[in-house]
Amino acid sequence: MLLESVEPLGVRTVRLSKCLENYQNDDKPYLGGLAIIRHKKADDLINRNRENLIELARYAVDQFGYPYDRGEIAKIAVRILTFKVLFTRKQLKKSSPIVSSSVRNIWPVATRK
Image (cartoon, rainbow, N blue to C red):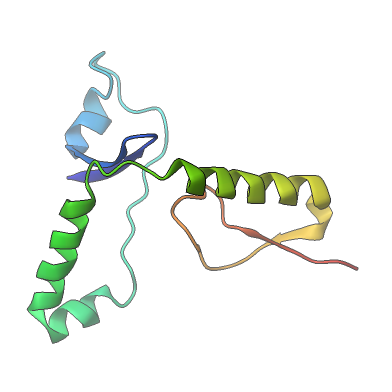
């Protein structure tokens, strides 16, 4: 099972084999990239209490198909454009943690000299 973010639909599930073999029903794989992500504390949290896994799974399933908030998407776009307008590429450096799955690249941190 693959969780896929689709604007404006939100998150949906897709068979992984569909992405690898026949993404748009044309016998071709998905042309983009796939990321397999697991939080470093997931095992510890789940092993301490199995109910945590059940609660997490319920929450995830409840979010399927819930449409994205267009206002939030607009705010993210404004932040990205603001960074691109105010800072040159030299003034930006990548931060190490990924802050939000709604942003494709790691948020740059501006450094002024």
